[in-house]
Image 1 (cartoon, helix red, strand yellow):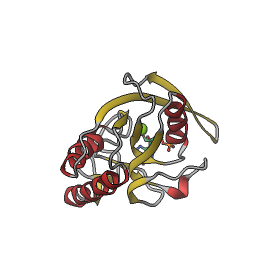
Image 2 (cartoon, helix red, strand yellow; image 1 turned 135 degrees about the vertical axis):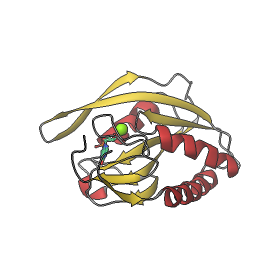
Image 3 (cartoon, protein in one colour; image 1 turned 90 degrees about the horizontal axis):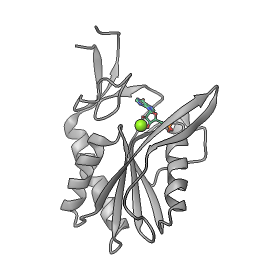
Image 4 (spheres, helix red, strand yellow; image 1 turned 90 degrees about the vertical axis):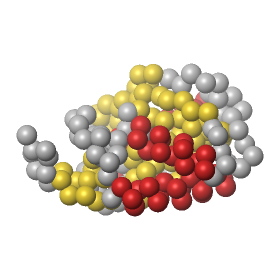
Length: 177
Ligand code: IMP
Ligand code: MG
């Protein structure tokens, strides 16, 4: 197994997801809402969040988009839509969900894409926010935890597509096997 340090434990994440769901439910009261998860990083967070908002009175539709971004030197990544949303977003309130806001480039561009599809409102929600890494003007509407400039894995976040399955957020402290 890989050597890691736990940064945010399972029960701390679960409590914060529940309180975030309460904030989201108050903010989206009375508007039909679609949760859009950005794959693959949002998969664990979104599956917990969609059940948590149900306990706060929401029963949103759920859709996904697969995005990848290509870094060019120090410039923020250029976004490529690998798979687009399939639901009609026109006139709807959308909550765009991702694992982490790092440079902010992914969510800032994804938000514009969904607004261009006619969504009435696109709010953004991340489990983790690394504000010190920002390269574009972006602030998530809902954020679970602000963290320092650390590379983290687990709870959906990967390193070279590994470690998404860790049920907590951790920093990797060595190479492992
Ligand atoms: P952005 O720089 O805000 O556009 O973030 C792009 C993507 O980089 C995120 O959706 C994550 O998939 C990935 N990412 C950023 N920071 C980390 C990290 O600490 N661990 C794992 N993935 C990260
Ligand atoms: Mg991602």
